[in-house]
Length: 348
Ligand SMILES: [Zn+2]
Image (cartoon, rainbow, N blue to C red; front, top):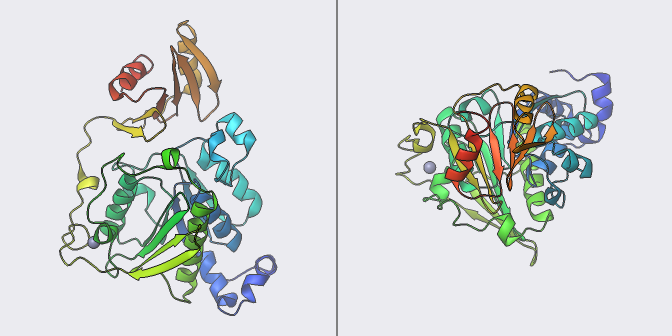
């Protein structure tokens, strides 16, 4: 992919860097990346990769911007939180202003066994910007199954960890962490807190790894685990080994991916006192029409209506509904309760 004169000007400082040069810049232009999760890790990764001229970036996130995100999720501002904008859409709007020459694909969807295949399709590498182990283990399965490299990254408190996983070559995430921790058993940002720059550092290192991977220079985090602690400023890299009997990368078993989804997928959002319900299929709701119907019932109060989102208050609950039918029921941690409230609004 030949560079235009404007691109040569835009990326001149990168092109003059001998390890990249014009050839390296052309490789970045051809690169296709998916960023799964646009929170505190995904935000800086997305900014650096868009700025560096990665030709195609898929921006995946299921969530909306909230005020408590802004402390560390540097893509967003107060306006986005007020509007409760989907992160994928807000991220695309910001990044388009950074680089209008690249393709930015905003995907406002949940990453689950029914969507995983599609969300990592046709990309060269995936960045882990998720905030829970369930999503990471699912990402590991879909990437091993489809032979897509990914960069595992996580942060909590002042601590961060990263590894590069190349199916067929390096250990997979299951080799590194043999047992998936029970959902809710690990501390989350909501309860343990997080120093904004810790996930930021993870995101920036992920971006560096992607650039090195495409251009082909330097050492990388293949078969290595990088751990850092920002309080003591300790950075350590340890070697990790393939488990010769790994159920995922050796025996090719994909239990998370192949679990049969009979009904909608219900997930508890850790520490958020909210339940997410994703229908098995895209319901393609007309939110305006739905709001019109709900208005007739005085028990429902329409709080917000945009093309991406309908927020309805019912009793003490606040329900946010996306056009796909995916809904977040706030103020409950009971799946049953969330489902029964939602059934008053849409049938799943
Ligand atoms: Zn493995």
